[in-house]
Length: 220
Figure 1 (tube, rainbow, N blue to C red):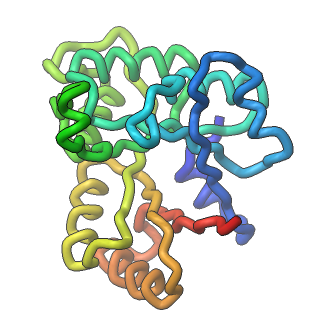
Figure 2 (figure 1 turned 45 degrees about the vertical axis):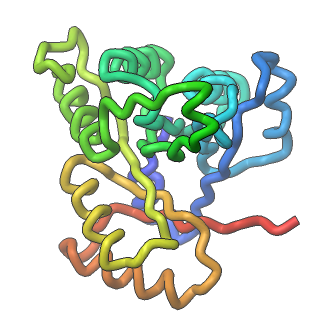
């Protein structure tokens, strides 16, 4: 399975494509047939889009990897699980041969949402990134030794709608704590992307900035 930083830095000048995929609202393999005919470099499995009940992204990513031979990345939000649940899920992802993960906070809850379910936020995204780095070194969140260290390539997200003077320092902190790549939300002005990229990369040694995959919104 290809790790995303290796894919981005393999020396090829070809465009690398990560395709977003929303898991189905049912656990039947035929519902994942939307992938038929697609051949991106990586399939990115979303985390409960719209805060709706869907197939767990770890399970969906493992199924896609096993049945389509596509490389995958799964998304994990800090909103819904405590530390024990998150790290146990990550060990399950390790068992299933998954290596790429994107960590997000998850959409906030509305008042109506709070009447139906609760947020947890036992981790914040940056602290979870750091915790996964520790798991890669063989330690769980309590500092206890794992039987086998994980080998995750951890990514994070960039909100292109936020001012760069706040978003870039946040991305740098995430990189310093272990993020190896970033997925950026869609931005329709190429000049905004160019300025962001130049500013972000200026904080790293030349050629050592984590790769950023910039979103493209498909208009039907």
